[in-house]
Length: 356
Ligand code: ZN
Ligand code: ZN
Image (tube, rainbow, N blue to C red; front, side, top):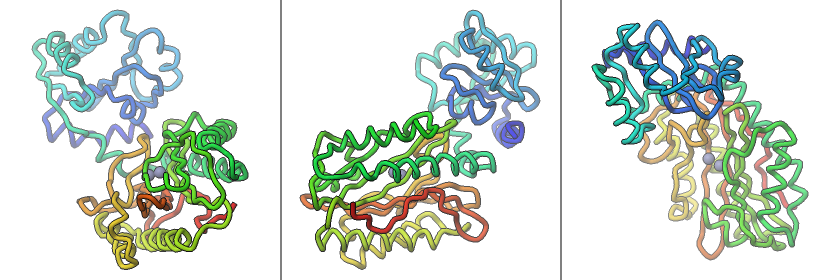
């Protein structure tokens, strides 16, 4: 499997006339060789791969790394890269510019004498954009764990509870169910705070009659989940109900429109035009969604400016929202995998208005 992922790099070696690529972004390293630790580098040539780490990670690498030779670097890692370059005739080596600091680049230039260093863009983003079967299984599993955790703690939503206490209960429940951690700092935004699309859980106390936007996700085996529900604590007002209905209908329309071949801009417009027609066009300020995988936000972006087209295997969120300053807001989000004829929803909480 991991060997297959690496074979998709072949085109980059050819396009850039590269002899090898030195990967330092840990997510890309995990994607290509399976290593889940927090320090290491992966040198890949068309025929070979070497994972370089120090002694703290040798045992972990021996267990996790697949289809690459694990090399423990006793002293300076770049000396090992230089030695490998000499032994295997690697003259042009690409590096991940976005994950290389200026000082790291200087060190590379000093240590890798005689080697042409080629600055590369986010070369794996285009490959990682479509998930393989193993990844879809992992994303399915983490999404379902996360949804079940939320359902288990929703009873905690009641007047008098602080947003942060609810967020903590949710995180503990996720860990109890096997998550490695939370995918991001949860958004728990009640009442007027709901107007902040990214209102992280605060000390605010939830009051009766308020809407609460809960944007949450778990992290497991490197993969993230992302889902949002907006629930009511007691009977909500007429306006809040109406806004929830508009957002939910926009969300459903967009999910029904997901199909390989649709442009991400057109998909965004499906939800956006509906919200506009209902008179709330000025209150939906962000894009419709984003890719999810080893990062919580990755390609493609679903927005009016997006140039991407959906393909089978992409995993994206659909998350329209309406945010009204001084009033509050509603967002509804599901993560879906694009399938042959449409999509499959990975996240599992029912999106009808839940009154707690
Ligand atoms: Zn989210
Ligand atoms: Zn999201």
